[in-house]
Image (cartoon, rainbow, N blue to C red; front, side, top):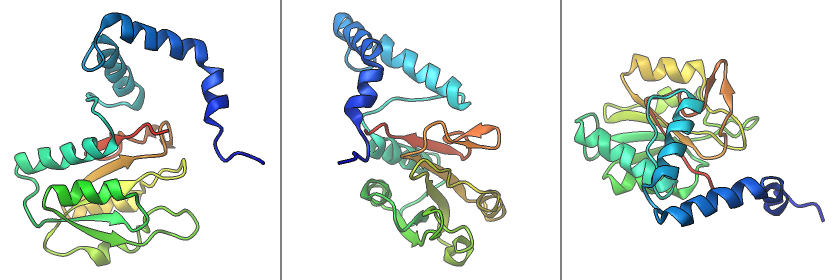
Length: 187
């Protein structure tokens, strides 16, 4: 049997570093919001090329908080539409509906399984205020066409960086391409 993703082997390659990091957290007594979390957020922001990074429990929480923040800022309102790829994970949709927003599903490209940027404009209505791309399968979903669509229609571009950490688009990393991004680290 060939394993699709052998997490045990991957973890073993970094076992000493992981054990030392876990021990530092345990020794500090700060499992949340401690120095290790702060250091990680600062290092990750620097790595992807953003000013800020805020740690939270999971990708769903991160997406929910991004959308809630845009509502608090007056950029999104109840009932507004958010365009998302039809083949995303349920957390993407739950973050949208949790904020009383409406997901609008757009089919993926068959050759990349990323949102089909040629179909996005057809899905835009007067209630559309954001596009949420989902970087899947180690690939970047961002395209110049998506950037142009968001710019031309004054739409927020939110990244759900579920599976493409460190993936590049030209000289920029996923998570630094849109207005805001959520990163989930499972597994």
